[in-house]
Length: 289
Image (cartoon, rainbow, N blue to C red):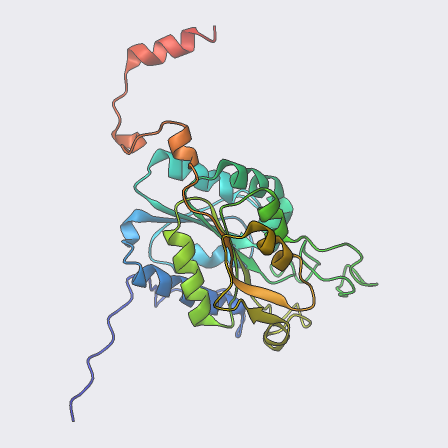
């Protein structure tokens, strides 16, 4: 009997890296789905930058053998935008948690959609602040009790899909980290898409969110059927506001939008390789004197 060949090492793995997540955390599955997507897309780790803010989900770039930038709380998107504009040859992924992206970084989220830079946003949506030990996040469901919201959450949860569609984001999707294979395929589509791609990923926090568990997500989500048309924006809106069961998959996709880099007239030569012309620089400074 032939001995099977050993599996090829994943170039994005960091096998000796100590992990800061709890056992069973949905971040592990999301990390594996992301690595699988990067491998299957054939992305060179030297030409990838993963940018994050602060939080448990924001630790993800630290566990990927690639280029990373770890910014301030809620500020991963402007850093990712700057990186992308400085070198269009890079694949840029911004990622962080629901609190970081939709709370502290909510303003950057809105304007990143408006700009439509060619990059991917992956949000670890566990409906709780995990790093700071269990306060309600922007996506926490009404009635959820926490050490701070002792009488239950009273606010309407932030709906990232509906907001993205209202701002006419060209790619809007939702995945569930418990379904690693499906999440990988959705992430692959997002990274391959030309434009700003929003992927909200349900990711259970097994310690501080005892409501939205793996079982809860299995029972309260469903995958869009094969005949669903992601090009129909009004149908996408209807799906985005469903509450009885929450849809998973690519909710909306529109190809051919102009991207921010083209609108600015930025070429393909990285900023670091461009010639510095002192005469032009002095002329620019003189205009502001």
